[in-house]
Length: 117
Image (cartoon, rainbow, N blue to C red):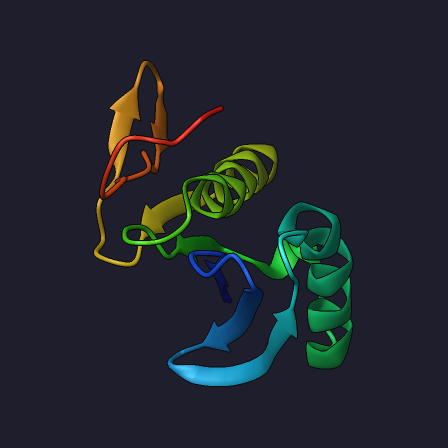
C-alpha cells in the first residue's frame, strides 16, 4: 500500500492510499494554514476508511515543488519522519530521493527563498 501526501497548497491537505494502482481511500481537507494540526488526524481517518493501519503502508510519496514554504516543509517532514519510523521507502512525486548518511529522504524543492520576518 502507498500513501500520498500533498501539502503544497497552504489552504488544503490531500491524502490518498493506493494499492496496485487502485485508490483505496482519499481525503481533501480545507486547512487554512493549519496543516500541521490536521495532518495526523486526517491520516487516522484515511486509514480507517480503507480498513488499514500504519504497518500496511509500504511506501510514501510526497508532493514536492511549488507551494508555500511552510506547508511544503510540513508534508515533507511528515513523510520523512513516518517513513523512518516505519522503515519504508519515501520519494517525492517525481521519484527523487536524497541519500543523507544512511537514510534516504526527500529534500524540499523551494521555488524561491523563504520570506521570514
